[in-house]
Amino acid sequence: MSIATDFKVCADGKSFPRSIGTFLLNPCFHSVALFRFSAALYRIRLEPLAKVVWYINRVIYSVDLDYRARLAPGFKLTHGLCVVVGAGVVSEGPLTLYQGVTIGGLYGSVRDNTKRGGGVFSQPHFGKGVVVYTNACIFGPVYIGDDAIVKAGRLVIKDVAPGEKI
Image (cartoon, rainbow, N blue to C red; front, side):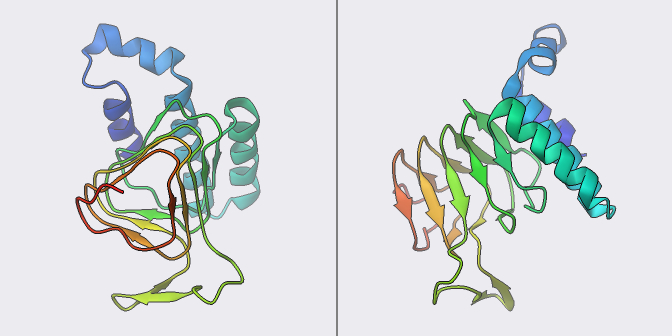
């Protein structure tokens, strides 16, 4: 189950007595748990309820994680205030986001609906083990390769090679 993996990543490998604090008092973990719940509601065709949970997450934690995003297990927010993840965003593996990160498409752009590997997408797609630091913005149909690092304050509108630090 992906929430269990998310918890392990958020607890940073702490043993049970210490990890209970993460479960009870970590707002970043709570936000990820609410995202997983709203995404589950969406998958079972309860979109109105998914939207309510999304709204609660947005109001309480100031995080906009769209329930239609497909984020692999191991998703982690670090100082997650003001994070925005759009509807069609996909991650293939663990993804770590810091405060103020914005990830979404470029609607109305000539770059919409770019073809990759037989598929069509208009939102960012992340490989495994990607880290996006504070106030970075990633827009459009771009691919961020495995283990890439997006440094603080960067604007990314082109693909990033695996392992690259931009």
